[in-house]
Length: 324
Image 1 (tube, rainbow, N blue to C red):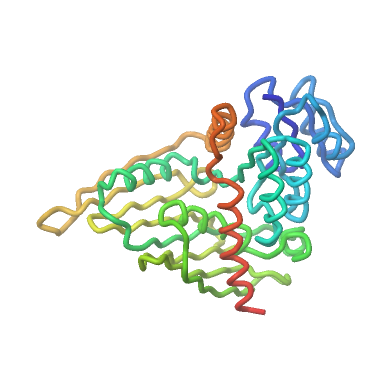
Image 2 (cartoon, rainbow, N blue to C red):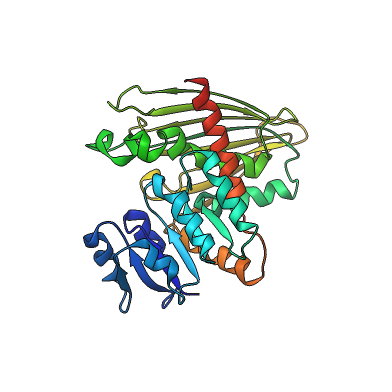
């Protein structure tokens, strides 16, 4: 599988590191310095001066797109037209309607497109999902999730703070991760409510987002994302009929990844508690790519796919619309 990367920032480097030796053959970025910095780590990888050269290269089978949000959907569309498979970073667009031309083009193409919701491939979340699927704790009643960081000096001047480029603030940035996870566990939401606030950062997009999402069956996801968390945090709790699953940390500055299962006993009282810890480096990027490659080789639909990304952004757009 020959791969080209468009967008050579921090995420582009993470994506390159997740590839097996010999996969990466070309990179492109609006900054030649960034492109050369990435290419320099991998002998034989060439630097293209524009992204069109990458998607038109007949040697390349798959394109990884890790640009700013305003370019994610347009480049994905052109890559599908060119017959390339695509791994596009979340949120994959600025607004859910930007996905419609891509979905239409995919119907006439053999290209497969997946979206970089790598949290699905973290070991604690994968194990939690398998426990739920096996029905060990009964049906899910509700979910409570929090995800946040504390920004950095100059955060309010970065492209993420420019709505024309980013499409939105924290709700669109980290919020889509929690929305995607909650859809993974619960399915589609029929009631969507939320609130956005800019409490601290002097920017025209929100630094905090609050969500109340409900399925047709009455299951609720109560979610908050924040870039005023100050101490990086990931906390995701799944409350079931016969117990609770709690995921804390996703490694690095978010703390050691841990899954705790609280299983209720027939007599109630203190639950039976089992803890799994995952102190090793984050391997989700590699597992995500390997899963996508396998789906391509076996001609199966990727999961998450472009329609999953559309549904996540539709939730965001619905909440934004409430605040117009």
